Image (tube, rainbow, N blue to C red; front, top):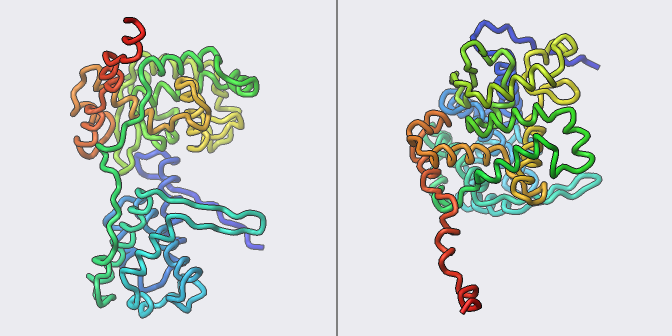
Length: 376
């Protein structure tokens, strides 16, 4: 059995090794998917490499692979048994109605394994993304004269809620305080959770404070290193989703919780594997925390702040929303908040400015019909 070769990165850039490794993982998955798809899509693959972000490229490729699997497993639109064998002639016979049927299939479908039957459901936003992936593909094939017609014109519209139509979910200031009190004291945790909390409370608090202060994305926090921080200058470096390096100032709260974690709780570097020595946030196994582990941690503590079930706790992205609404609520400029959160468009930041905390509560507080009736 052939031994799997380990990938070694010869890093001559300013980026940390773990950032390059993450980018390399994305690129490798893209190449693996491309190798499984029809060869006549090679020009499209080159187009994606030069025109979209790596994660967007990966999302497009996953959607197109899923569509090709659908053609083979759920339709008679191809004779191929493997996705790579689907022919250009078969693609040319596709119509807009075939894509509409695929999108309808994606609303709810099942995948059966030897032991289980999995039911998958997609909301309108997920369906719209799949539609977008196929629209980009078929427009490219038409533009490059590989298809006789632009069938994307026949795709049914999918109406998704506009950003302003969806109520922003964020913690209120008092809920933030309850959450931080919980991570400090262990109050609200189950007996089993407290056993882990005793060993990780300083780490957990540092994670929550960084999310709340800087509105970091999950990937940005997960990839932080000890070497990302220059404590003599009270600043640290993060890498944005477009690979852009951004320097963030440390305030006293962030500095305090990081000092406590690094000097009182985090394992000494000598006890760690070489690949983990620089990772900032470590699991109890001494490895860099995964995005899933951080997500579960945030859901746990936010559920205590919200006084709800663990399942109903908030995601890290809602702590990003909490940071935005809190900053704007304190009178900070929308443009300054846009720069801190790395929003491409100020209109995104304006959504948080339009979100007025307790506006519904304020509207109804003087409309106490039943209470007023009882007091008369």
